[in-house]
Length: 383
Image 1 (cartoon, helix red, strand yellow):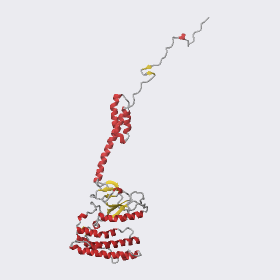
Image 2: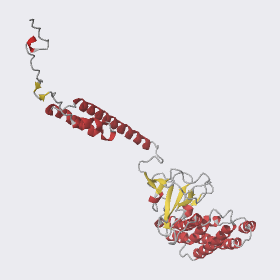
Image 3: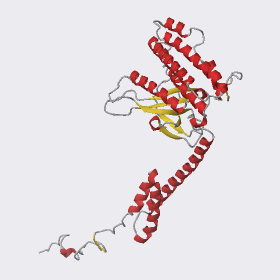
Image 4: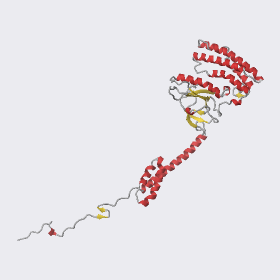
């Protein structure tokens, strides 16, 4: 009987196959060697260096990371190098811009590139101004229409030392009267105008000696009854050239006779400056102003005659001025009673000479107060 050969898979076909055990490494069965941890300083360095304001910190962290990585075996040297390079470049560029920008700013201010060409100016608002402060509004003093007494709407200003060229100066401040609400801008404007007139004469009693100036004010358009800003700021602005001194006048610069004269003329001068912009168009405003002119003239004439101790050369001119003011007061009182505009004009200019400038010029000259030099066509001369 023939014995069949064993099947190929039988153990009898060859030696047994060896067992295949998994490879064993130093970190355990089947585990690759772990990577070193990433340096947090290196990552932070690159991130912060990309933020301009934090670039200096990124530069510092990058340098610290480069120093520590070789000792702690962490990864991230390339990130630290990149953070250091970017941070250094940003810091260097910022430093260059500051140096160049500062030099250009100095040149700009020294060459008059600023509004007034002075580094002593500082930005502010009208609400920061007090009596005596000099300033420059960026938008100009008056509107394009050059309407007198117009309220400024842009409150931004540059505050300027008064011994530097400046276009405007605050001559007084006051609070609107009453604790009640005032919602009508016209009412606020009228109260602001009335309140500013006497403050001008406190600031500069000799209005004749002022340069060519315009008068205006800043005030709230309306006020509540519960509080809020009620302050009116009265200011005068140069209409020709920029003053380089304060326009505030020192009464100590006048002698007793000059002070008495200026005090006597104040009622008449205040009445003159009380003319609102409506005088030329509104009959009621014109007649009210004429009445104030009449009262002011009478009061000034009385005070002029009461001055004691005038120098002999001034007595005649001062008396002539008082007489002229009395005569004008009669004309002004008549005009205040006019029923029509045409009648007002006729009564006001009854003799073609509606002011006392001639007599006032003579009185000032005799007292030694500055007067305009008529022969030179302007300017001032000391009497």
